[in-house]
Length: 117
Image (cartoon, rainbow, N blue to C red; front, side):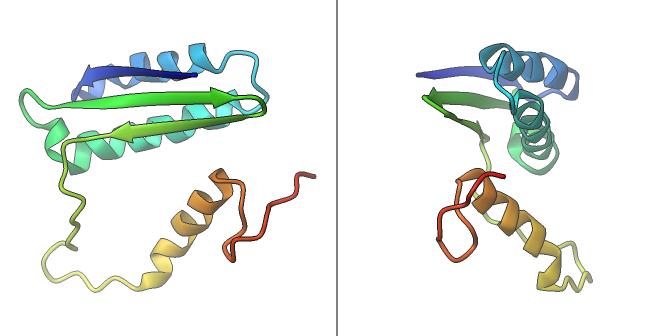
């Protein structure tokens, strides 16, 4: 099942978008985690893309199936990112994000299935 809602790109709308995710995933043992992840993605869309500008918007999509769920946040950005002028960032800053993305997909970083404990 897939359900999507488009929201205005306003910081004040984040609680409503979180409630949307929580409502779809009610009863899921990972609903709290998915709600928190969605809130972070939504905040990033508002802060770091044109979605947070006047008239901007973002879309939250929740997909569910037997034993799994996926939350997507689509914004109006180009996908390009550039560090602020004069900033020297080490790639190690991005390691946790990469691992988290793989964890959400149910695989380890090397593509092997992740086993639940």
